[in-house]
Length: 399
Ligand code: AMP
Ligand code: MG
Image (cartoon, rainbow, N blue to C red; front, side):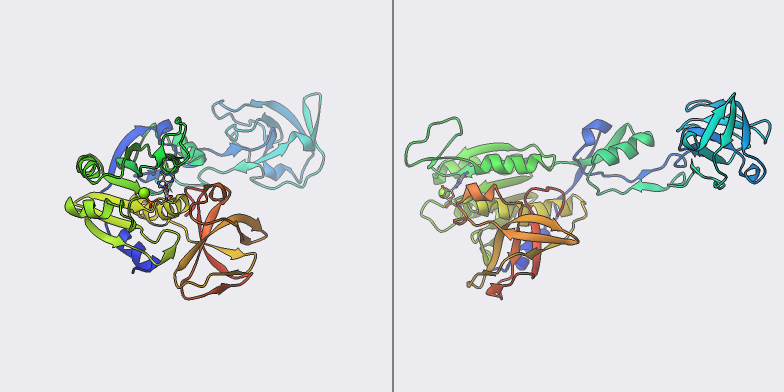
């Protein structure tokens, strides 16, 4: 059986062909940038006044404290000029620094009487309260690198350099399939032996938080129906996400049907808990992820294998994180144990507080977890204060 690392490696080495598209700036939120964004001019583009006050030339500071006001330089005015170096100009935040001045003194530190500014002290220096042209970047510098996740701050940068349309990664087409005769829809009233399907909604939400809209479909535990549905789905999608029907049960038809349809199984079975029957396969450029049906197995495998693979091939740089256990844990089986945790930040440490639960079918406690830590297969006891790889369930772009 594959270890977690081997399974991940086998998944990651399959390249997902990436397509791009150009969208209006505001439609790029939560997408992955597919081009470098450069400064179209220096940032800031002019010596920018950063306080409301008066502008003078700093050489005057040792000579005098009284500065008659010549006029006003407001934000949005073309650059004015101080005519007499012994005078000052009133200036506003965001204005271009007037010619013949190099120092801005805030109103709080002057007293203005009869149109003359009286400095309360002379402790000012050249360029004080001036954001110098080109301090943050020069024209042509790369401000945003392709592969980053577009958030409010990145939208702001693109707006300031005049990017109204931007090249982003085009999301792959994905269908999420639930399987199981015990499942009914959320609007139905389940009979005593039935449950409402939750995994498809959970996976659809997880994809939505990555900026991807996916279709859903339910397929009963019937080999013929599954085969017919899969044949169509394989043609129409880049990726299929299945929940359930991948294990060894009498009605777990997915592995067999995939084989019949020429889907090459690259992973089936991982030495981990939960998620042991996890399956990954491909037919040409269509990729199939089979997540075991228990909700925790589904969500953990989604993050550990699918999301890692997707983001890697979409060009997103990934972070590896570690979190420190807050209590002793023991797990005696020689498989990787994915332990659900609450994540707490304490000083410079990320703490992992175990969320007690009744196993991979426990959806109630799954919803209380921020993520999971992966405890290695070769150990049986995991002490308070030791650290392990953390995967977030609630911060879609962190890992
Ligand atoms: P399976 O992997 O098909 O053997 O299913 C394992 C467990 O997960 C069973 O108890 C199923 O009822 C449950 N399960 C499967 N699919 C879903 C789903 N979409 N929503 C909630 N539970 C599910
Ligand atoms: Mg099933």
